[in-house]
Length: 449
Image (tube, rainbow, N blue to C red; front, side):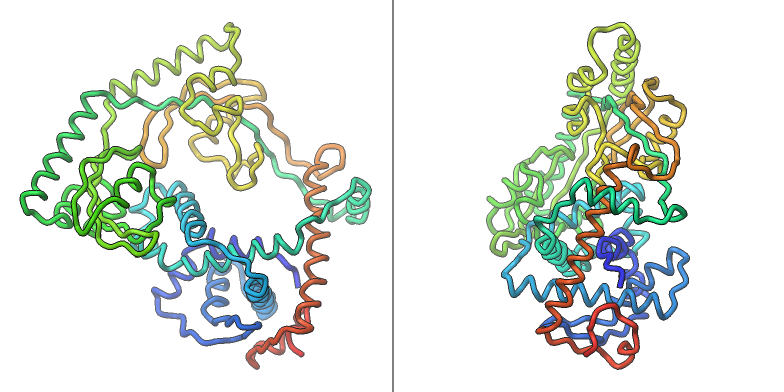
C-alpha cells in the first residue's frame, strides 16, 4: 500500500463536493464495509473518494478501489488508536479548520453564494455535513504526527536517498516563484460609515417596534450566506466568531436584539436564538460599509506615489510594505507572501492567485510592477505593487539546487517506512473485520487475517 494520507485528505476536503454531490444525487446507499477496532468504515466514505477521482477524469479500476480502501482502513486504525491514547481535537479547533478550508474554497470560486449554488447547499449545511469528517481527519493527522514525531533525517541519509533514485525517475521540479507585495485597500470614508450606520439603525428601530427580525434579514442583510436563512448562522464558539461579534453574542439573553456592532465586515445587529454550553446560535443583519470611487482613487494615488519613489528612495520595498501595506501577514516579512498550502515563500505557478499571476508573468527577477487593481475575497478594493524576487525554470531535481525538497522527500520516505511498521505492529492485536467483497484486495498490510 502507498501510505499517502495527505492525498486522501486532499481528495476529501480540497474536492469537498464529492460527498455532497453523491449524497445529493441519491447514489450512496450506506452500509458498513469494515470495522477496525471500534471504528466503522462506511461504503459512502469509499464511494466519495471514488467520485472525487472520477471528477478529475481518473479511471478508477479495482486496484484503485483497493488502494483507497486500504488508506481508509489506515485512517480508521489511527482514529481507533487515538481513542486508546486519549488523543482529542476540540470542537473549536474543528470549527476553525472548517472555516479555514471553506474560506479557501470561497476565495477560489469567488463568493459564498457561488459556493452554495455549486453544491446546492447553504454554508451552514456544508459545515454541518463535514463536521464529523473534518474531526476524524484532524484526529487521524494528529495521531499520525504522534507516530512519526521525533524522526529526523541526516545529510548522509538524504544523499543516500537521492543516489538510490534511478536517473530516469528523478522528478522534475516545476517553475516556482517567490514574490513580495505592497497591498493598499481603499479606506472607508466617514460619509459611507455614517450612511451604513443610519441604514442599520433604521432596521433595528423597525425590529424594536415589532417587525420580524428574520424577515428583515432576508430583505436587507448583506451577508449572502445567512440572509436566505433569516440571518441565522448556526451554533458557533467564541473562537469561530470575530471578537466584536462574539463579545456581544455571548452577552445576549433570551431573544434580545443587540445594539449596533461594528466588525471588519461592517455593521451588525444580532439576535440570540439559543445557547448550548460554549456555543451560541444567533441570527444577524449585516450592512456593509461601501467604499467610494474617490477612496479607491486615493488608494491608487498612494500606490502610484510609492511606485514612483521606490527607485530612488532610501527605503526598501520591504520597509514600504511594513509602513503602508494592508496585508498584515506579508507586511511584517518585507512584503514577502507566504504560500498557505506549504508554509514556505515559494509558489508553483498554479498556486498563485490569478490577480497576481498575470502581473508576475510580465516581470523578471528583481523587477517591480506598476500598481494593479486588487480585490479581496470579502470585496475590499484597492491596488497592489508586486515585486518578483525569484523565478526558477523547470528542471530535474538535484542536491545542489533542491536539497530542501529532496530532504523532505527522504524524511517522508523514512516516516512512511516507520508508519508501515507501526501498522503491522498494531494490527497484531487489533480486531479487524472486512466485508467479503473486499477481502480479495491485495492489501500491503495484513488487514485480512
